[in-house]
Length: 313
Ligand code: HSE
Image (tube, rainbow, N blue to C red; front, top):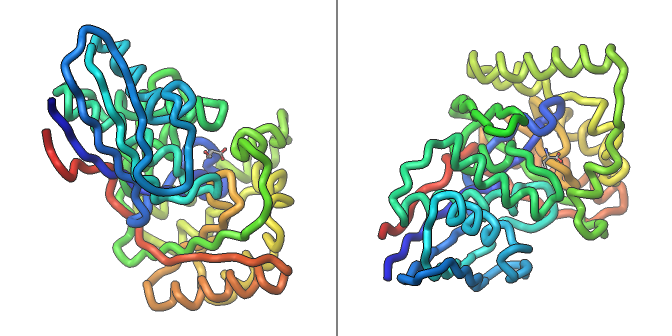
């Protein structure tokens, strides 16, 4: 018998104009996965949830189960695998919860079976988990959960994520409205997106996305925030976030450099220069939700590192 324990962070995808391409890893919260393997002449996966909101335990309907089965199939692993799952990242609110579990699992399988997979291959396999939980393979959250910091990743068959460190003083405010959401929320949030957009909107988004990347390259929080505007995806999704406009307005007024929907929502993300100011910004976001007759909760965190092995084989 051998076992390994890995944790990987929550993350916020898109940052406005970078739909399916950009994501930012949080310092907290982090999901944890322990994989135990026992010798066997065939593959078997069992999932046990140790804490958190319940997830499907049938391996093919579970992101972590799907990732482990895909890796075992492609790399010829035969073993009886038990996955113990500590879900600490809230599910279905735009914080990359499924990605945190999928990334932890890919990294744990790599470590446990000495596979020497590259970061791009880990991202590819973790993306298999996203396919199951959100209906489409996209690599933004899983790349952030594996690499940490700010990531840029394409949509191709083999993702090649690029990581850029975040400015040290960057703080993140995450505010979540407590609203009733459709089941399979991400799938729904993707189904309402426009199939075609005007060239002028594309130009606007390329400009904003380039501003964000320049901001990370120059470690300039003001520049990053300036680029966090999008009317294509957020234009379609803002009706899922009651109080969207007011939250943006109030957070900016309280000193946020940029505000956007976090991933597929309904959480909102604000980036702020400095932890002290971040608490004021978070309060302004929660007050804006309250003024919009919605209960909400939130927290402040920093940009975090990617998945890490916490207990080795
Ligand atoms: N880029 C994805 C989306 C993130 O916005 O649909 C959610 O998983």
